[in-house]
Image (cartoon, rainbow, N blue to C red; front, side, top):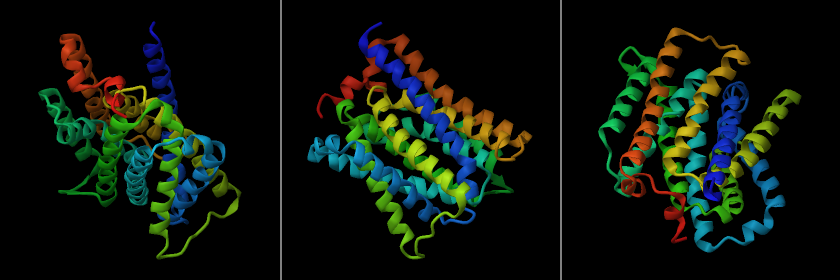
Length: 309
């Protein structure tokens, strides 16, 4: 097994662990934002994460080039706005449904890649789009209209897809730690701006602060570093497919620990969305087996993504 292949496997397992951690936060966030405004919660969460990361990774941040700092700022803004939209959506929909709607970024990622990087969208990907649309309809439609919470969450998924494409295109393995720290700081600033109008409300009680610290340090600082490092060793599409397990973990934790019900609507809609995610990955695998020469164009390896950084 080559060193590159070995690193890719480690990155895949690490990203799967990150995905499980993220899935565990959906029902925690839903409970917390009942008393703390979404922007307030996110500002405190990522401020704590950024302070811890800066204290630990100060040298790596200083080693970043100006270009990498600018990249970190753009990525942080994308992620910060996506976090705000997703958290607002959680105020208006179940954690399990939010997980599956958020997971549509897996299908949106190759579509954005086609739009921004001029990659071709094939029939399999369009089939995945149809499956996702059907799944969202089952999960989210209220009569003939899309629920507000699901609509806002879908907008956040689009931004997450943009973040994945940009991270896969510009993240350099050696700069992963510094880049993640810059992102955490920018996310905190974006959320703090949103929190200013109504004033900052802090969590109260041991339970809320325990949830906050878990989401700031484990699901925030550690996960952001791990995601950035892992995606520097994986293609954007492969990373998106690994993270497609997030809605499964979100639904699992929401049902087992969050008191939600595994309804037929949730199971059917979730199955359609999850099927679409893995259909996209199947397209990538078939393309690699069919003609190796097309792989670099359709799903660039990490070496191709970072040779010019």
